[in-house]
Length: 218
Image 1 (spheres, helix red, strand yellow):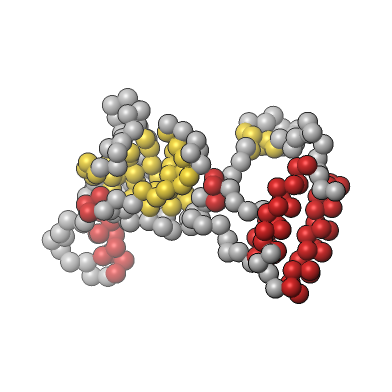
Image 2: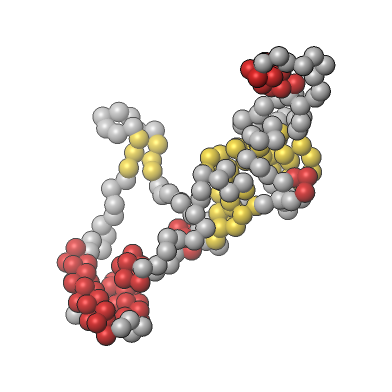
């Protein structure tokens, strides 16, 4: 008999097994029964919970507690069990975070600068969905590094490739940019590549790596 908390797994597995060939069906069915039996034997008792994780660990005084982690949209949307994914040979979860860096939270949504995707991924913790923020035209992101969100929902995103802080309204409309996108012209040509790079960097108005908003200041 299958444990009550494992019944949904059994139904999910049986639906999957029906689509397999006879040989793979019996082989997978035997493995499924073994896994379900093991799950019943090792399922935690009601009332038990995982031990919280703190940093720094004892005997130091804890300052941070680990709650959860997100690696992509699949962590929010849920999906099939690990066993079903193993039997069916399904690909990894969709919408993975490629190279996450800066993070901000506003109105129940987690904003993550994904440098690998050239976008800001928005994880809606209430609706349990993830959607990308990919502006076009003059507000196009190249290498989003960090961001801050004002109380009214205005986004300030640092783009390390554009060397600018890009500003967007709460609805995602591009407003303006702070910083010089292209270097100004240099009167005296540099004689070496090192001097050329130094002159180019000096010609840029700024090279932002982070941003913060407080009251009426950025």
